[in-house]
Image (cartoon, rainbow, N blue to C red):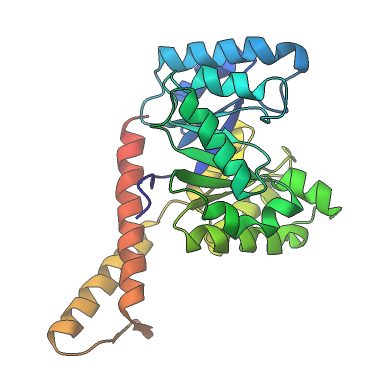
Length: 292
């Protein structure tokens, strides 16, 4: 199992230029906070944002939340200095944007290691058609990839697609990256929704991503959090069903049968594996929420 396996139902981007937001993130019901130094930060605020984020990291106080920093592109004037600054500041992982190849992953890791972060995992953003096409190459590049994060807004723009409730323009890309990630035991998180008023579409997007198999969804505003957390949290009836599946197949095995029918559905070994995974995630979520 991926050693970085943990709840990532909700991953909230927090602008590094705003000290108040950096502090507020310590109080939110969110699984992962992404302290953001990237594209949303104005050029004249880049250096100050780096300082504020490092101060927030060193101060701590984020409880059991996963704390990630998104750095700038490594070919930008700020990216390499971002990595050097955060590598030893107490971050849980570094999120590298615009990853399009194995070479990009290797470059990111080499820089992180030279900066004192050899102990850290990385996350990679898939935000371009080339990144999607090379998703398997990227996912296979290193065991230190904790998560692949879709940047669907950027991707949709580059695909020249239209934003629709069913997300038809990006469904292939979502499925392709998810398939590559799962083939190499990586967590995969869906991209943001930029429409902050259409919560019906946002909730539908969360449930669509859940049903596809994603671990969670990234977001840009705290009032989107309840929808993410609810969609990706196992429900009591799902937990009960998982326990029933495990117990029923165990009894069947003791009786010399390899399969069993539970509530009209055929149950085999892979169903038990999925049931155990659901129960494990439910336990991890409970522990995480106890530390909020």
